[in-house]
Each structure stands twice: as structure tokens, then as C-alpha cells.
Length: 75
Image (cartoon, rainbow, N blue to C red; front, side, top):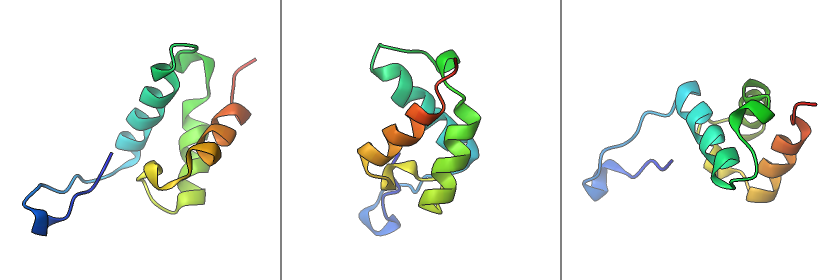
């Protein structure tokens, strides 16, 4: 999820809670080790958004993102 500048001639993407949810689902499923059903996606998004103060969760360091995600693995 990036937000290229308008000056570069690319469209800016409006980042929302929905785009953050999509980002988190993609991140947890892209490893092939888990699915969205193994995590509390809503709590990951809420916590990451609060920490980043932005819907662009890519601003978080990968270690920070995965620390948050690991906190919300469903039992």
C-alpha cells in the first residue's frame, strides 16, 4: 500500500480502515503459514492504526507489525 504523490503523475490511494484490513489479511496469508481465520484481524488493524496514527500500516517496521500480529493469534 503506497501513496505515490500526485506530482509523480500517479494516483494517490485513499487509505481507509478497509485498505488496512486488506493489507493485514494479505500480510498474514502471504506467508502460507496461516490464514485470516487464525488471527483477530480487527484487533491487529485497530492496534496498528493507533500505533502508526495512519491507515497506511506500511509505515510500521516489519518487526513491529509482526509483534502486533503475534499478539492476536486466536487460540
